[in-house]
Image (cartoon, rainbow, N blue to C red; front, side, top):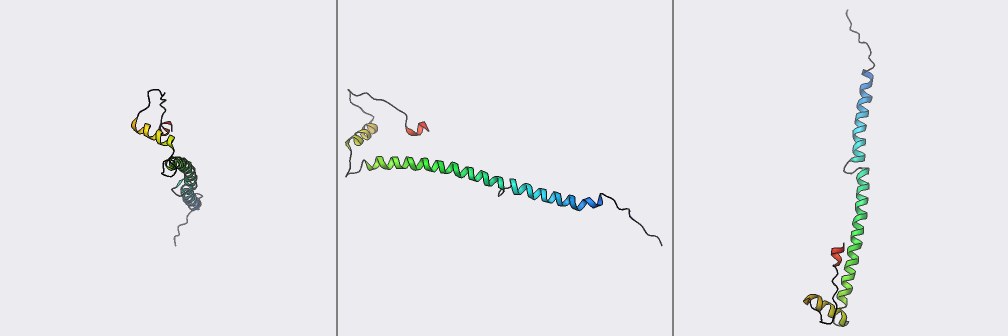
Length: 109
């Protein structure tokens, strides 16, 4: 009776741990860098801070515009505001006035 005996190799014992390390490395990489990973959380938080700053800026501009429009309502019509808007719309000034042109608020930003 012939039997074939196999010699135990050290490399055979490393196959399963090597596959486990590769498996864990793959999922560990995607847990950090993936679409829903830890790094994307930090990017989303930074984007939220930036968008909140933009929202605050737009709200401030809106409040300014609402305040200016409120000055033009019938009950509280201010002559200076009306005069400023009329001159701005018609692009006119009196002969004895000095006109100073300044950029609009959007051009500054």
